[in-house]
Structure formats: C-alpha cells, structure tokens
Image (cartoon, rainbow, N blue to C red):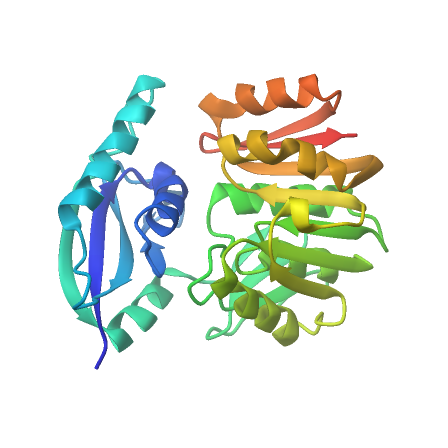
Length: 302
C-alpha cells in the first residue's frame, strides 16, 4: 500500500489559497485541502487559525525534507510580514504518515456545491445538486489539480468571465489547473477554449472535466504557457500569482486580440500595484477591479 506524508500547516483561512499554491509549487504536494468554519447562521466565517493539509508521496529513496519545508513556510510568512501582512497565521508545520486511500478521499468532505456569480454552480462529482432553471451546473473533480472554485481568486475569475464573455468568443486559459475556467467559459457559450498549464499532470484532469461537462469539443488542453500559444483570443484569463503575471504579461497581451479582455487573478491586494504598473507600461487600460478577502482580480483591455 502506498504511503504519503500529510503536511498540516496552521494558517488564517484568508490565506489558504496563497498557501496552497506554495505547497503545490514549492513543496511538491500532490494535493491540498483546507477548511472553512460553518457557524449556526450558515455564514462562512474565516478562522483566525485554521489549517491546510498537503500530501507528498513517501519515497524511501528520497525522504521528505520536513525541516526544509518548514524553512520555506517561515520565509514566506516573513515575506508577507515585510509587506505589512501580519494576519496570515503561524505557518507552523506538523506531519504524519497516511495511506494512499486516506488522502485521496479525505479532502472530499470539505467541498460542497456552491453558486458563483449569477448562474454558475460548481458541484463535486460525488454530490447531488438539483439546479434552478437559470443555473448553469458544472460537475468538477479536481483530482490533484489546483482549482475548485472554493477560494476568491477562482471565484473572481468566474464572475469576470460571466460578465465579459460574449457568445462565440474564443478564450485562452493560462494556468488552467483543473480546467474550471475553461469549462465555465464553454458552458457560458464560448466558441473555442484553449487551456495551458506547465504542469503536465493536470492536463488529463482538465480534459476529463471538460468531458464530463459535455464541452470536450469546445475545450482543448496542453502543456505549456502563454508563450506557447500562437493564435489570438477575445479573452485571456490567467489565475496565477502577481509576480508571474508581471513576468509573462507581454506574452499574455501578445495572444489577446485588440479590444479583447485580459482577466488577471491570483493577486493579493498588497501586490496589485505591481500588476497595475506593468499594465500601464504596456499601454493596457484597466477597466475593472474585483476584490474579495484581500485578493484582487484585474480586468484590462488591450
């Protein structure tokens, strides 16, 4: 039976998505789960000290470097504090071994159907949901890919796509992860959607999510980034970190049609100015800011 190391990190739930990106990209976690607290009035309230769990395969030839992981976590916490962010939580790490089957299913208990924007309902593949006539339901199984719609950066992107997409538009989804933004775009009427991600392991997951939502003929996915896309699109969406957006902004604008919409998310509020400056330097006009829980999505026009 395969074994995994379960990494549990103490974090303010507001920063769960930031930390989940870090645990996947820097620590090499195969998957992450996080918890929100439900109160009696059914309002989701962010906890001061919640937790996020990540899972790493226990390889006898290369043991998990727990002390190194904690060092990275504390360094990231200090970087936030240097920006004046002192409420991200302790980032304290604890670990235990778990069986393959245990981690593969444990995160499912944290994720339930949710409505985003005016029409979109994201429904886990293992739960039932009877939609209203005006709802557009997406069935989603993220596997080990990033993107379930439970956190602000993805929700902001979905709301922006719902607002700006016109029937027949062609969309590029850069950093597609689970394919959630691509599938949303197709369900909302996009004529063609291309999703790219530099993690080859998520491509099959995104393709499967397109298939189960009957949009496999509209969506295509492949390994790569914006620089690997040759065509131009009406909308380009990138739900990645601010520094990465700045680094590849020329490529993102390069695949956007004149007058097209650029939807940028994964940006913590304190770093939004970096993206604003980069857009201004390239003569891209910001037309809207969307904000939720210290996260920002920026919509710009070329």
